[in-house]
Length: 80
Image (cartoon, rainbow, N blue to C red; front, side, top):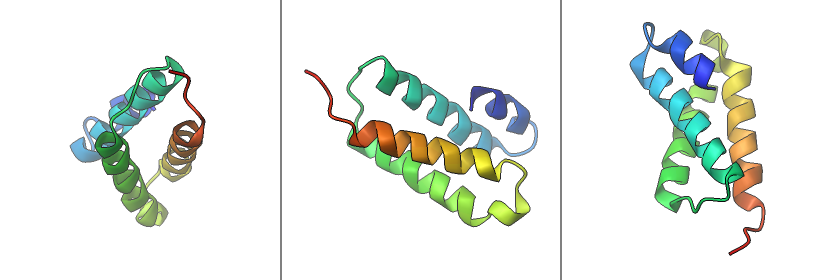
């Protein structure tokens, strides 16, 4: 998603920001960091909105994949 952020940087800033945030959040989950529910929920909603426009956007399958990855990582039990 970080590479997609660079791709979208000059095309659509909001999409680029969502891509960079998705990459950052996935890294945080994998590192075992605690992730704020509002951060996760907001990004999840933005990715859903991007999917809804998916027919018009080149990166559609990647938005879906990022959202599914985040959902799986969020649902995974965390060790404290």
